[in-house]
Image (cartoon, rainbow, N blue to C red):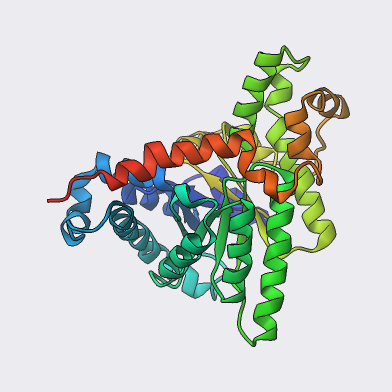
Length: 345
């Protein structure tokens, strides 16, 4: 009898579920075998599979009209990737009455401040399959779109999000959109609030080095966890229906320290492989607090305070926060723009 893997144990014994973080169908099949209940894609991952494995995307490459303008060409190509994943998850979505089985499709990162363009994209993506979670960035403009989409019954994953104030704003706007939907006699869209814990750590590490901050590497490795644990406690306190979705995990510790939370973890194949190795601690880490001394040292950096305090930033500041700009640029330059540039047969 095969021993139960950590990921299988996690799904069986705790409220924590997890999504597969890859746009590659072969990798996704492996993730589903180990209990993934959804799929995270983004422009970077979509570009990687389309450009790196053209053999499995022949139908997509030949189906897209060559005369489409760049943005619409990228959207059309991405739709093939997202819809293939959605088809693979559709049985789970149907069997759970829409609770699980979602696949993310992300809007053009160059439009992070353009309400009209993001709203139009969201409505188009929503029509691709019943189990699409449209990915919007956690900017002030996108929060407006998020509320309207939820009110229309569109499920949203709010991404490019690293901070307590961002996920609280996401949850509040989801609540308002759900109230509007219910008043109209419509089922509201679900909402997943991303926390890119590893990307926050990466950014704060550079800030600490640049400023000779009095923090240790062990402190930096707990920064994203501190934000996630504080956000989770606040979500429970306020009774939000939105679900926190930690992403950009940098090691097994990001998973084990949040295990037991009613969260959805986004897990890339390399981290999945580590979690499938024997010896991963099978314990619930969500209620283990971050040491006060660690928090005090991290709070000597203003950029951590912005991320950790519920009022650390106003929504109008989200788009200018360092990790937001870095991530949008990467999604655009190493993702969306490369998809636009794919030469069609």
